[in-house]
Image 1 (cartoon, rainbow, N blue to C red):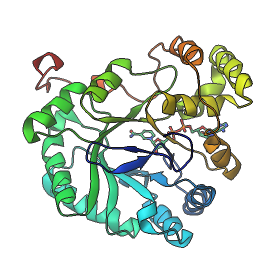
Image 2: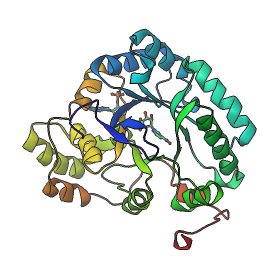
Image 3: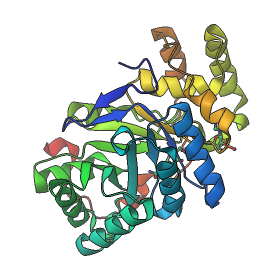
Image 4: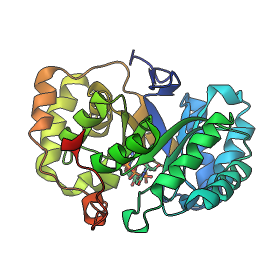
Length: 291
Ligand SMILES: NC(=O)c1ccc[n+]([C@@H]2O[C@H](COP(=O)([O-])OP(=O)(O)OC[C@H]3O[C@@H](n4cnc5c(N)ncnc54)[C@H](OP(=O)(O)O)[C@@H]3O)[C@@H](O)[C@H]2O)c1
């Protein structure tokens, strides 16, 4: 069901994750971050995405605490670098819990695999142990390619439950999406609004505006609804309470096949963040064909 801000998807291990959440990348000011998270929770968001590297886990923790919402009703994601390795993963995980003021996380992601350091496999081992110890409900990764997901499966007999990647109309990740869907890995997008860069793309805005007009919505709402209507969990970011609310007002319409086809035609592989393929270097252990 994808008809309310509380709607969830069930991950491979049975944990339920909201389809829409707020991300707090680049919100480094404590009050600004706390206020954004507080506004989101107040409006009904129940999923918050942070990372050790965002340097705002304390502010997120403060907003979680002062919301008064029972812990089990909020889905909290944090991340650590794949370059950490096994022992440092323990330290980083405890640091995140302490900063957030929590005793467990709902989802913990390896932020980037950093393949040249070749430590993401041992880092993932630690994540599996956090889950076994009851301190983590679901293990995930971010910016992982099929080769790296296959390697984790070969090592541990399990795929991560989530792979969080850059995805928006210009970068739709069709092959990766199918690869993940076939293996029970939930794809989660980041930068659904192209990290704010839609304004510089007049042709794309015109296509999105035609669809938006049909439903009485704006182009940002169309971009976010498109993720959910293509079965991708979505996190968006804003520091403005009115935008945080507006971006969540997407549960009273659904895109039809014609809209999805129009958006499919925008895909030209243009991305904002670095391409994980550029990181691969010589450390490719398995290929998709081997599976
Ligand atoms: N795993 C990774 O490697 C990775 C990488 C990047 C991001 N992420 C996660 O994904 C989250 C979302 O991605 P993102 O931060 O790149 O951003 P995004 O949601 O694609 O775009 C955010 C930008 O769009 C603006 N915006 C938001 N709503 C708007 C609206 N209704 N109208 C006009 N402008 C609007 C925001 O400005 P204002 O804030 O001024 O409103 C901000 O500049 C991040 O916060 C983070 O949690 C993960």
